[in-house]
Length: 321
Image (cartoon, rainbow, N blue to C red; front, side, top):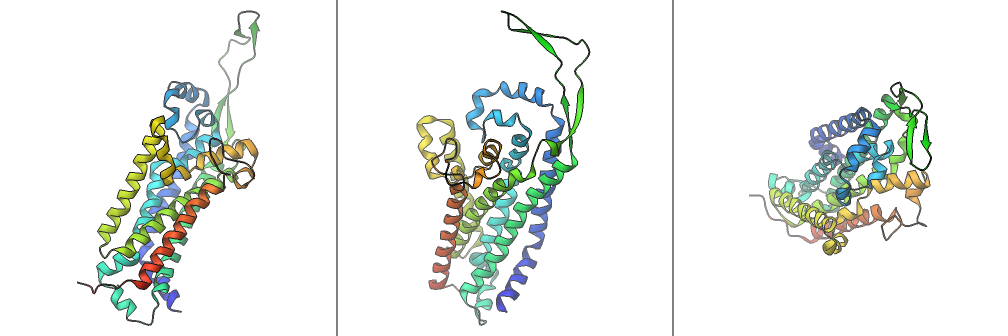
């Protein structure tokens, strides 16, 4: 009974943040799919070929971006999508202990017949449930965008090749015909189920980290600062590891190496819908099977929650100022 009251309380406190992040994610995913339909595939390929030397910085091979599923799947790597998920996780995780202490409400809560574990469980329920819904909203935005969008494709004109010269001569003089095709005929929304799980696992990792650091401090601003510092440090390590071969060992020490939504999309294209869930094959250019990477992030998130629970149970909480 007490846990349900706390859950409703925290849901009310975080409702505005959830609505803001949810609407932003849903609308952005929908618009992102619509933008994909505005670019001609042939022209896009010509432009992208000019930047081949920067392919190592991309989260996916350029060849995958020449397909509609690959370009739509880039939504999960967009900064605004990751930012909204991280903002939710940091805001909710930092509020567990240091947020309550900073507001002076933790002492009043624990003066009631409430276990500290119940307090942590209530926060975690609201945070994890909100995170799952936000990830599903991204997927829903992509799905509606795919079903509501048409793309214009250029029909290749017939031609013949001159022997020994490897030159194609068109047989028609009129302009190439353009056809409007529903995007749902080119993209299967189920392709992004594994990418949605990858986004959830990234958020769960950040949520667990925020909760653990919150259990160690009494000031919320310091907790937020610590989480942001760790996040930026990990991001810099990931960038350096991708940029220089001599620093690729840094990729083994950053959690961004386990966030591979685009690789999951490529596996679906190559091996079918069951590919991202198979433990029998390794990920291209990776050490483990595809499901292992999100499981690593979730395992670390669970570990952080367990450490936070241990600290909260044994910590001598200071009185509010």
